[in-house]
Image (tube, rainbow, N blue to C red):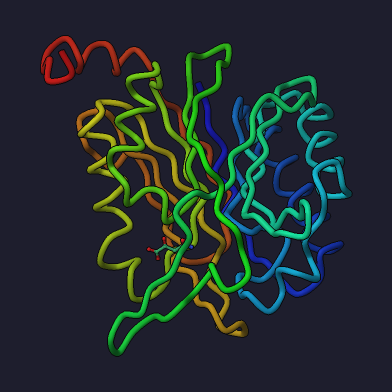
Length: 259
Ligand SMILES: NC(=O)CC(=O)C(=O)O
């Protein structure tokens, strides 16, 4: 299968972010992508101060546009994530659409990004966002896939559970930063892939020094042997990556740790 990684720049204008995502997604689809992944918080700058203004209910403008992008381009789409409003709370939510534009799954970030690294990054998503309460998997024509959002990747047991529920590939829209990115981005994607002998796909926003939060970029695909299949730089880029999902069974047979 071919995966389109859309490492896009995100600005303080939801309408322009949506148009930009549509254009980049069309480009990825025209190059043969079956599954396209957008970054964490792709319609808003990644900063607590923007989330209330950008938040929409499920079924809002961003949701409708994502569904149309999937249908018009006949692709599976993991719509990065967006601030979602429900019952007076805001969640960091990722919607997944199939080739017909039907929503087949959604995940709200369970483990919120609250860190205080001495001399480095500070962030408290929980000042504004509420956590999701579950992880799961969803079927596709290629096999069963799992989904987490950014900080969720640090919780190995959640990915082990997705593997036990049949996942052969897990997708993580994420926005690590210039403290955690160089230290842990590649490491966590390789580790979760190797622990569970599956493919991992991570898509970040491109870095933009005009905003308070400097995303690491480096969108990545890692394989069941724990290798990096592809890793981008920090700038905006659309990349198509071909993977062979038969590698999952092959590695699990040769190195039967999951048994
Ligand atoms: N956006 C995030 O959740 C960032 C993150 O997980 C990190 O470790 O950095």
